[in-house]
Image (cartoon, rainbow over all chains, first blue to last red; front, side, top):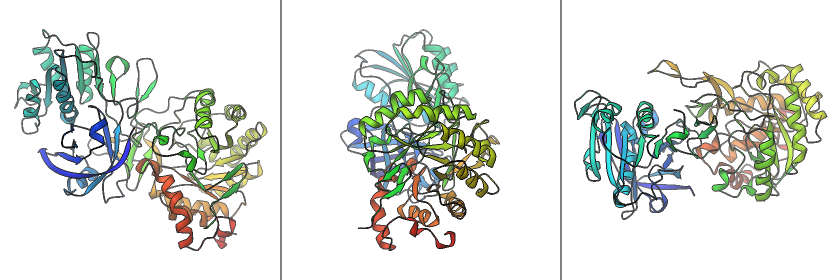
Length: 258
Length: 306
């Protein structure tokens, strides 16, 4: 059940150029939030930024009672969020949507996570949770460049990490689709999860959906975040429309048309 | 305590506040956040004869103190609304008056939806959507021509005993002849304003943000326009007006009532603040006392429009 809460900002720091991580005190949210769910955040003190902004939950720290999310500065709204001070609070709706289905992942199961850009943060919480469940986690991360990379070390603590960069300054030279084709074709996985740009999702869908349960986290411009406004729909393979905010944002790859 | 009740054709409201069409689905989503029995009434998402898929995405774009939308009347169709959505509301909120927003492309399908709604006892009124700016046919083409608007109003009134509130478009040179025409054609009330047509562009791609190119502007940015149009319509008709357009607070609601409205719909404010409606309802008596309003009858309309 989503709640509206004022959540204190514990910390905010830059993790890459134009990419920031915000940590919030959220003792209720950490109890219920699942990897892949999101929060809808009001930009404080700026009523001209009228709509809430949806951000995927990156990590959930049950012991500390804290959640984190990571965002890219894209316009005046996110610029204003960079200016938010520790100790002030954010008006947050959440947890929203349906996350990655992992309850039935058994110890020893080899799983593949594929993320790119700001699609990477929600996979960190997923990787941590899967590791706790004893899964054998392999993560493929795609960045524009080394300068714009982040979180590799944190993923390294959850399992194997393969890295690609568009300009070749870090790891494999090329996008993650090419990396998967070059390095992972012989590997056996039993479940795949992806979050990132459309090209990345297409690559994961095309490569894995026929072989194993494959789940994609979709992104969209949203207005309400809870399924009331019908703004963020995605076409499905059976010619219907699903709401990314409330039916997703995570969908079985075979269900959606990208 | 000031009296916040409002009595309109078909609608005895315990307060004048209702969520606006398209901003509240069919109620289920917001029922996660509060008891919908607090509402004066509820206006549903636009309902058409057959299911509609709506427009391609992106369908929304933020604007300064507002937003554009071009959903394109996506809805499951009147059969599904009668079978699932309205019974759900009746089961959970039996006392809540429901106003169904009816949309279409031709006189016949509008009338068919109006006729079908007889089957739902919790529907107390129809809001006739002749002002959707986001579809190629129907909607606004009825709402921008007095004769077409009157014809449609008459055809729908003929097939239902429910009071019909005609939702007017602000995208016209003069709204008054349209208000007068639908009034003569049998409208029980009016509902205004629908959204104002706007556009936004992405500088990186140099393309429109909305797939539909144009969308309807709503939010606090449109409130002064809504006030002007409500006041103008009030100057030519005594029909009850459900006023809407940028209302987020009890003061906004009172300002709209002074301009000439008789009840208030709250639209995109729900997206920003899910508790927008109950917050306004809770604040209304306090703000009425502050501004010395004893009730919300016609007496509070600005004397310039009487």
